[in-house]
Length: 116
Image (cartoon, rainbow, N blue to C red; front, side, top):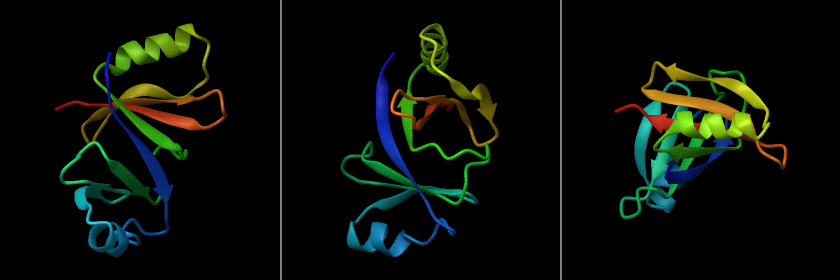
């Protein structure tokens, strides 16, 4: 299992709130924009990303996302280690498979694998 990226999640009333700052000031490109999330990334280091969400469709607020190449294996290890799964493993309609787990510091991690 390999980790492809770790992305901080920020929350705002409108996912476009930070666009001027992230695009124009920091020079990040918009990697994805749908109704509840906009992801900004570096054009030269595409794994350098930040996500701005209004709210996650799960109703929870994960502090960060970890992109992996085998989400099922990570889920199995988290369960075997006794970590609290706060959002069950599932396929989402926007093309990812994911689950949320509470980390030892008390934050929620969104562990995600792109399905494409």
